[in-house]
Image 1 (tube, one colour):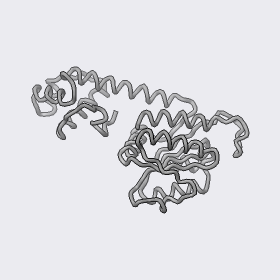
Image 2: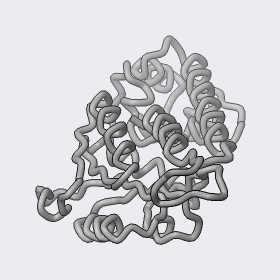
Image 3: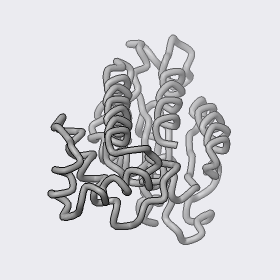
Image 4: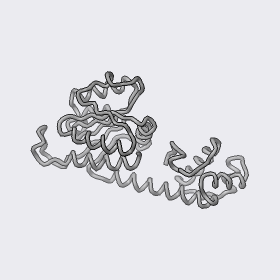
Length: 238
């Protein structure tokens, strides 16, 4: 449970800058399943138990035990959520979750993101666009547009879809985005595709069918499973 935003983890806090190191210390203890008491926490952070008690109140809790209980619950929730996604047979990723965490936290910080997908993938773009707007993330649909022409000079991340993972126009957009310093999140049905190799966070989504074609005229769960993946990721991070 890496902390990138204390305000997101503890929304009612009045913490000071120096408090973050102690919060990180407690979180690491929680992750390791170690016992945590106020006296040892104070000693290991070169402060007093009364200072730790005041920190707990600045974090929005009545006491130290209440804060530790809250952080433990949050850690358990994050572990369950991670298992929920990784256990889904339709979705695979080669990145570790800390890498993926950082990219989505970056999108939240920037408040903007590029979207791209052609053909039936345009449906995924439209869905993601509306969902992101509800999350107060300004989405820019790159349909018929080049990244460099709409860029304001600031790096932005790109969420891009391609069932084959080899669409030339899509690969060009990935290259442009990276050249401008942006991160790329790819969704594809194809194992060993260029999409999987080029994505900073790449997801292979199982179409659950042995016979699919570019016209999408056969049974194909790729698009539906992409929607499920987006729902999970947006709810988890944004």
